[in-house]
Structures are given as structure tokens and as C-alpha cells.
Image (cartoon, rainbow, N blue to C red; front, side, top):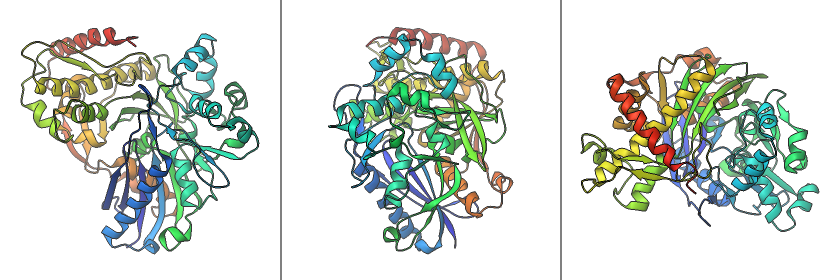
Length: 494
């Protein structure tokens, strides 16, 4: 049996999934790794742990499926985006911890850039807003704080990459320093219309071009793994940032189709076709994918804290033992008891973009229980998604008729039903919810001819459950108004 191996490197864990020609999961392995919090608002990962966890689950899933590496036609990579890594080219060793996309240490740098009136210029070139979320200010910070970083960067001794680049480098034994357009588009350094690193932005952020990887299409043969890793060289043929990979895996191929991924954060993407749509609602215009030299674009709304709020209930408050327990606890009460939880633990993303917001709960009474807090946490996720959809519909001048969903928290029926209730449109969960990895597999498989074309893979998408909205328009409006009041009280609270 010939298969595709997808490497799905996420914020809290690394996964590897083997897919067959029918787009079905043959085997899967997952491993969590450390989250490092040196200071409030700072989030780091150990790059060596990212790599070791990823390669170990790759071996584990092949062993579980009893598949030889010789039967793996290609590897596809998908990854947490914006997370910024810097390493020594000669040794391949990181010179610092990775600065994670959630990290807010460069918020003051972003404030200065906004104060200088650079927002319009940067949005026009990159489709992004100025925010600590993206890679450029993280990379600039690293160059300023790594000993002799600036000189070594200028001399070509250091290499920068997002997580996809780091994985490709290690998989290839240091021969590949590449990324794809979907990941490059998240750095604040990439011109999304010209399809290349932008000299003006490199000068603005003081980033030497010598640091940067080569930008390739999302579906292409980049090279191969070191034969020593798996006993044989395996072609590396697909790379896409996790949210773009999920959009592709959900087969949102036509303009106007949208998906939302419920992971550590929430990420809604709307396909806008081959024309980038400039946002007036503080959404992001981003590259969806580049296939055969043809770039597709998307509007994106990024919610920083989604599944992470459930982890906080587990690890911070200790009111649940496992993340999956949150649904049972939340369902033990009929409503939120008037409690609204704004999960702005690392600031607010789209469409608010407030680095200084912090999480808060409102409406607590003597009757409030852990169950009410759990329910309010889930509802807070859904409200943030509704905020993004409201903005997206204004930007794209379209009214969505459905939302396709995926990611770990999409398995939570209570959350999905409330999401449909808030949006007023059906929420559709596919039979295969590992659509991020599936998208990476599809991109890799297309590049090597494992699948004939996009039409063949589009026929593999199947719904598993459809959540129809149940709330009355008035009840929905009441929920949304109370959310807006709570939200306004958190803005700028730090």
C-alpha cells in the first residue's frame, strides 16, 4: 500500500498521520511538548523539542501502520504559523528558543510602528496588520538579543525560519532552507502580490535577506529527507501553514467558501480566489496556497485563545481533569448563569487587535459554579468566531450559507451547536476532522501524482454531522449584546 505521510506540527503537540489514496487515516501518532513562559505574555518553545517530537511521531505512526518508509510516496508538512526560529547554519543548532505566535513581547515595537503611520503601507504590501503576532518583530528582537546576532546574520551565519522551514531543514539534513508562500505571507516581510520578500520591509525591520529561506509553491517537490532518518530518502512535496492547509483539506476551493479551525486558537478563512481582498474590518488578507504558479488568496480572522482556554480550565483552575471533560461539565447546566468569559489571555486578535486586552469573567454571583464557568468558556470561543464572521461578511460582501469546521474542539457538540446558534447558519463537521494534516497530504500527493488533480480529491470530502441553528433571533441578539459589553470592559486592561 502506497501512502502519504503528513507531519502536523502544532502549538502544543506534534502529530504525524498516514493517509491512503482515499484520503482516509491509516494511522496517527501525537506527542505534546513543553510550553515555556519566561515572563507574563511571553511564550517560547524549544526548537529541539519541536523536532524530536515530530520525528518520533513520524516513526511511531509508520510502525503502528506496519508501513515501510519505501511505501511513503511523499511527505507533506503543515505547521503552527508565525512562530519564529533562528539557528546556526553550520551546526544546525538553534541559537535561542523559538518565539511562539502567541508571544506578546514585541507589542511595544508594534505600537511604535503604528505611531509612525506605517500601518497602511504594511497592509498594502503584506495584507496584514502591525501586530506582535507576526514573525518580523520577533525576528528583529532575536537579532537584537542573541549575542552577536546582527553581525552573524549579516555574514550569512544564521538562518531564519518558521516551523515548516525548521522541519524541512532537519528532515533534509540541512540541505533545504525553504518555505512556501502561505507561510512566508505570515511574516510581515512578504509582498503577497509580487510573491517575494519585500526589500522595503526588510529595510524597515532591519532583516538581512541572507537570513531568509527560498519561497516555493505549496505543492512542489522541494527535495528529500536524509536517507538516515527513515532508512531511505522520502520526497518532501507539500508545505502549507496550518490554517491554509485546513482550508485546502476542507475543500473550500471556490471563492466564498469558509472554514473555521478550533485549535489552540481559532482561525476562520474565506477563499477569495485569485484576487486579494483588502480588508476594512481589520481582517488579514493572506495567501491561501500557490499551486503550479497560481496563487489563491483568503481573508482570515485569527482568534488567539480558543482551545487554550480549555487547557487553562484544566491546568490553571483545575476544574477538569482532561480537556474532553469540559463538554460534560458545561452541559450539566442549562445555560451560562449570566456568566461571560472573555478568553483574552494573550490579547485579542481579529477583528479587535488589542495586545493590551486581558482575560476576564463577568456576571459572577454566589450561585456561579464551575459548570457555569466551563460553559461560559466554550461560549466565549464561539462569540469570538462570530465577531470574525461579522467582519468577514462586511469585507467580502457575501453572506455565508454554511461554515465548515475542524480541529480538536470541533468534536465538542455543545460548542458546535452554540456556534451554529450564534451564526445563524449550519455548522458542518466533516467525516475526517484532521483536515490540517489532510490538506498537507493532498498538496504533497498532487505534486508527485499520487492524486490526478484537485477534482479527484474534492470528491473525497464528506460531512459527518450538520448542526442547524436553533436560537431565536432575539435570544441570539441578547447573547451578542451581553458579549459586546463584556468585551468592551477587557479592552486595554493591561
